[in-house]
Length: 187
Image (cartoon, rainbow, N blue to C red):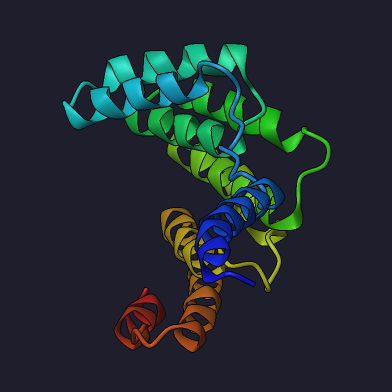
């Protein structure tokens, strides 16, 4: 065969191979978010970056009216409401999340912990305590739950319960709780 033909066929074969590989390779997909969510998300981030927390809350609340399926956004919104002092709104958001079907166990634990925080801020210490005790021992929230539980026991002056919770926290963390436990014994 004449080498001239090979020089003509080689670029043609490379081109066909490149086209075949491009067609066979799946195109990367963009994550599908509900229309308008990404714009709303960026607007709220912009407001937060500019220390305009009220506007960011308003934008996120409006987005949740339209798209209420995002658990993370609702948790963040509830936390922002709680920090702003609107405990009733935060509690309402977290209670609606608890009643949502199909929550994974770790999601349910996170919502229970946030709801316990709402109750604690509202002064409903018994409800907060019950929710924190409902959180299982294997949850990733065990340490923050124990810290909040200790605060509740301190407020209620239940020193024996505070000692027990501090001992459990001491076994979980490298942080020494011995001085705190000693103070509880003095009370």
